[in-house]
Amino acid sequence: MSAVLESLFHADSVRILDALRQRVRYRYVQPVVLRADSGWHVVSPCCSRNVDRDGGVIDIAWLEPTTHGWHLHSRDHAAQRWSLQAEAADMSELLDLLCLDPQRMIWP
View 1 (cartoon, rainbow, N blue to C red):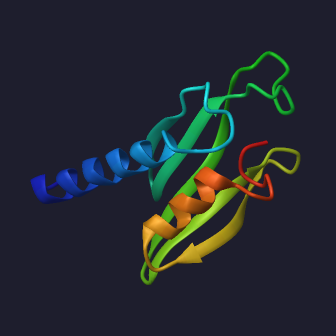
View 2 (cartoon, helix red, strand yellow):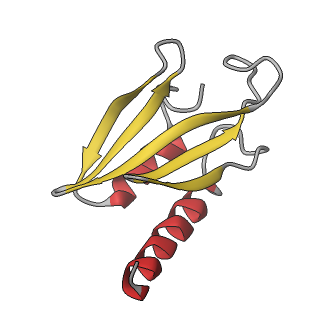
C-alpha cells in the first residue's frame, strides 16, 4: 500500500475516533475503530447488555466508502447482518448520526 493511502487511512481513523469522543450514548465505554476490507468498523463493549449479557465487544457501525461518498451501516444483531442507515457525500454527516443516534439504531 502506498504511503499516501496509508496516510489517508490514518486520517480517517483519527477523524472517526475524534467524533466518537463527542458521542451522546455510552460515553463511558471506549469504542475501537478497525480497518475493514471496505471502510471502517466501530466496535465497543456492550455496556447496555442488550446484545451481550457479559458486556463483550460487539459490532456497532460500519462506515463504507462509495464512489459517491459514504454509507453508514448499523449492526442488526438479531439478524446477524449489517443494515444501511444513511448515506452522504461527506463522512462528517454520517459521524454526526453515529454520535447522536437519536433513534437508537446504532448504539443498542
